[in-house]
Length: 361
Image (cartoon, rainbow, N blue to C red):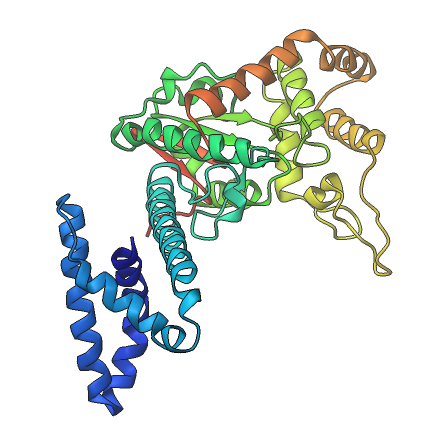
């Protein structure tokens, strides 16, 4: 292990030696000589051949030369320590290499270099991530590390898959209704509290995407492993959207259109008001409570044609088990069938697209 560890250390030091050798060529020559010996030893290890003991002894003698003269009794225990440290260096290097490979594969297959917590990966697409719970002990962490490999390999075939939006039995809301049935179908999965979803919705609306496809909006409230919702009022918004759609076709569109495109009388984005992010000039929280959020949604529906009896019926439907079933069914499709790690996620033209939607030039 000493020669392998020496090769790893020499490889890391290579950049610095290259700079130093510009001014001191002797250092570069000595480095190349040692690197050739280390590589020769490593190559023999790879081919399961016995490594030359001379290089290993050279390394040890170099490190222990002064100790041999002053404290001969320390040589044996220090030699053992060198062997142990060499093993640790090799293990850490192999682990780092595997982690780097895993992160790159995850980024390619899942869109995020961090499988468990996509929000921690700055290299992925701009999304509202669906994070899983972090391991709480080394045993869970080790198990999770191997599980992530499984998720990556399961997702790799998806990169070459032809997606058909009609294959996924989502509970959805039609944007265009029957007059656009002849157009190609597009599925748009979004969270009503997600700022990236808001930006995508605005881009799609301004670019005429809703006029080019038979769009099915899929409301999806992101939850963590403990069942808590990522955004403050997403769950109640999704419930009201499904309930309103069940009573009056197309009514739910006014809800999401107000949240994603509108502002209140104080100029605050409705998205901020629902998410608990709105502040007045003094920094005081002026966001909606749950009751205020419900009142605002109902006021929009009244403007859209709901009378008092319709609102009473709506309040009953919101709590129906079938609404909960719709939410759970969408969650199962998004997280288990599609293995989505972040939204917005769209399916159209045979492809799956995750992240901020922007019009192509």
